[in-house]
Length: 355
Image (cartoon, rainbow, N blue to C red):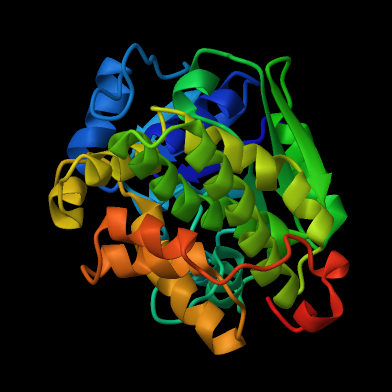
């Protein structure tokens, strides 16, 4: 039986992942919020707004009809912006319930997401939001798919590796099998907390990395930002229950390296524009996709304060986004912080309480 899969979100990453699945010969439905985009994807087989030189695979059907997208579906993949996850997943869960009440036998769906962020207000990870949405619906997962993966390069079949993470490793292995190709390699992990946080928080550091390039500060400065950024991501992750080893993997340092060093990264692009003198509002207005690092920085700074986790880079990036300081002032503040050991375990006795 041909596997039936629906991908919610027809941006660059959602469309690319739909194609990866379509190339396996699966019956893939790509759901777009706007009917006109669904029509372009279906009729012209293109996605001009988000991807140049992109052709929709023949096994992918585009639609904006929720009922059509969900009928008999075996896997549901969410690739929508973080701010839309709760609304879209709630509508999906309600539609699945409606189909069941109408007497239509549905498979038990595997819930997966490939979005990267923390919800504003609740500070929840995306898998937590999905678990709430599907609490009354029989399902497997949720599984997170995350790692260093620019959609533009995956669409060209450039070799890429990501991680599928879930507390239920069997569910993660199912995602691994569904996506694996000779150019798209998937590893598994049970540390969903670490994998989600690595994917979300690296966007904050990428904003700063772009600003460094926009300001012309050089690679020495960027090396500081990336290294110390990874340290504070790890601190928060461990506080929330993640395995510190996860942050040395694909979804940690791998994703951070790619996002902080590539002009394909919209978070890098946004940071670069801010470093060049544009305001945050002007920068966001000029982007054609959501810059997750902007909201994630503000959310994470609040979360770190609540948990008493020191995250100076995140805090200063949040101040920049809130209009409290400039990017140049942010870097000066960071460089003039109190001197301290690099690694706590090697701290001298008088510094052992420092963070």
